[in-house]
Image 1 (cartoon, helix red, strand yellow):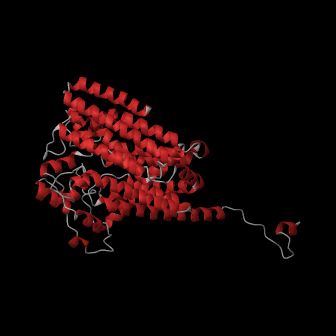
Image 2 (cartoon, rainbow, N blue to C red):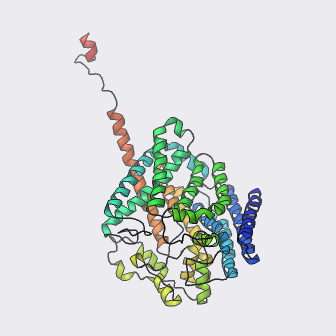
Length: 489
């Protein structure tokens, strides 16, 4: 309750400052204050549910999924002060935007109730696993850092760069199919270097006991941030890394993780106002240099909006722009091409069909992308099942992440326990993407787990070989049973 009260005070001060600075209308500041009050309430409820069930911030996939959704919901709370910039093909009144946000708050609260039925993984078990396998975590951290460096050097030599520059190749324009393993490895090693690096940095006494390992861990985190921010010119790394830091802080104590999350929820809306200056600093060309505060909010805070895209689809089509076949198409698309070589002829682009044929909005994929919509569980639900999907799909995803997480909590043991749990946790934090990404996230979790287990096993064997090789040779034994040194005397 105290966190909710503090949220109201902090958010009220922010709204008051913005209202005075922007000469805002009553509707603008009223909707903003109400949205942020809802954000404070559901954030406090999520912390309470996680604490009551002792769910691990580092291991519970549905909890991580909801934490990221709550951050997006909170950051988008001040978007009512700005026009819709990203999607000029549709316009929503402030009332319609707020109605979508209220519906999302209801869904997120219900998701918290579903989370309350989850029984694991717990904080105590994850902390015990970290303590028991700390040596494996250290070896994984080193491997992922140097693997990340190697992949980035290879991609640079191949000509890959940012979609926001005139680089020859990028994530939407791949040079050849055989480059996908390198791109996948770069993503995997980058994510693992941040996760295990933060675990090592946050661990008590890590600097004093092994300063070199501590520096390697910090270097891996900073390298990934610099690569994404300065080379790929993507900004969301500045949100995902602090969230990961707060969740990973559970290796120190659960209370530390809760406090960091609460602090981030309070300060992120204020810090987001600096986002447009950061966008210009890193060289993004899609924001004008004379951007005022209203346009800055439109360019940054609307980037974290969860519901306007979904609300606009419902409003502009009367709730009829949906097609349930997008679900089986997404599942088929997740089957690897090596197993399903002819899937291009079978898998339809239902996403583009809905946007272009039923709404008349630009769409596209790969090099022909015409509009980059913010796809979330809410918009995916609307695309598949209409208005009902807005409410059902987020709940379904929380339930599904929870079922898989609980199954691993019961079945996995030893080294595999934590590595599979953390792999699922990492994939659950990816909340953006159209329907195709939902099954792909689960496939990605399997890839993460296999790679982590393989690296951990190889690391253990290499450590044992080095340990044996570094032992002094045993004394030679003479024929009479005495050592060679004794015989010489």
